[in-house]
Image (cartoon, rainbow, N blue to C red; front, side, top):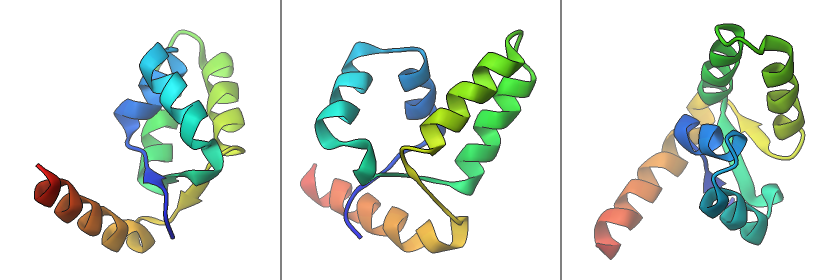
Length: 90
């Protein structure tokens, strides 16, 4: 499986419409992006504690339709391999 495993911060940057993040995700395609279920839980937690609960939940739900949500256990090897790749490319 080749793609990009997004963390909570990247998702928040996307939701806040940071141009560099939005542009990059549009270039690579949402169909190549993944999040883990823990990230989804963190995003929903943030929505529930925000002043705009319904708007933020809809934003998250729309986003989740575009990416694939992986169970945490299934993403451990993806994460570990990416860390090695980044360390070796630096």
